[in-house]
Length: 387
Ligand code: GLA
Image (tube, rainbow, N blue to C red; front, side, top):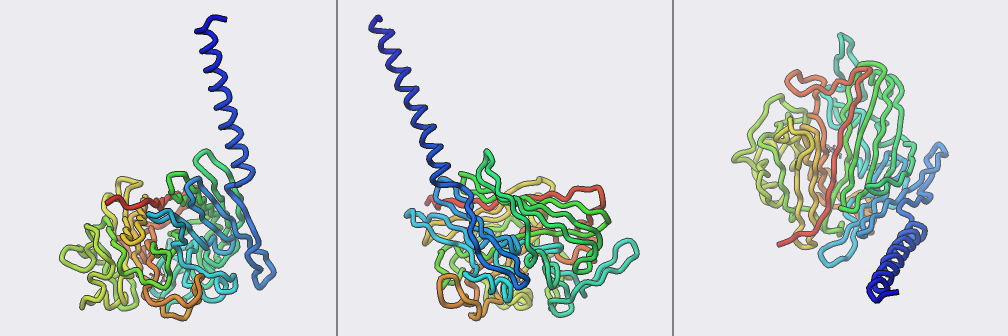
């Protein structure tokens, strides 16, 4: 063997053993650290066992989901020092989710947000819904999608571990027409993205507006409020509301108001301003009309928490986002970290259609016809602040 061919033989050996070690590492990693695990979480009052599933990526991000309400019970991400922290509010006990959750981490449907006077008309028929928020209907009613048990199928994909959640809502459930088959996919990527894809079909004309109701606190310390988080919302307009939080039908420019989040500003900066809309919402609890609604998937909002260095970006194909600053949290609900959730210790960015669309002719339609495919996606992307 010449010296040259010996050297190239040696290099091939190195390359082969390199490939072998990589394959062995990835097999070991798959087997030793499975990306989807499940464990028992609790049992509902009617005896259904609820499992908690964990999705893990290769950067220390872990998302936990239970079959009750499709609820995200925890979302762990590193801070700028590499310390992992849970950034979503929730409970340790299933019974708290069953009895008194303000939609912590839940899938919301059939209609996320409010429908005025708990009724709407479709093709000359009036549908009466449960009035579970004063005279209005909120988040799908008394037993919305946040309180049903979803079927969950874990699936490893090329993009990362995922969960496929399905639920079929029978005709007239909570007053809504049509058998509605819903599928929601949670996918965790190695880019620290949680991709949430919703799809639904119906056998009869109906209305649909699905969303996710996670309360975030990027400090991962739930004894702290969220007023120091800096928020940007790419919306030139928001929908003013009446005193029962139903949109008046007007579109207001955010310019010169506390609702201007076009450039990053802290949540606390103007939340206590004397302002009729802030007064009605007891803070921010408003639908922001996202710019570029014809562009499909685009950046809708960005949240920066300087102290921890955690950043969250929300991308969506939806026309609007409800920004809610945990104004109803009042120190009565038990925190996962001990103690109780105090006022404004979490904020929500719920991507969706406008509230009360079924009753407002000037709002984009939320009607789903039989034969049509409802399909939307929202991505929550986490990163570390580079300043
Ligand atoms: C939504 C609503 C709020 C409140 C919360 C749940 O985000 O807009 O007004 O009802 O849900 O407490």
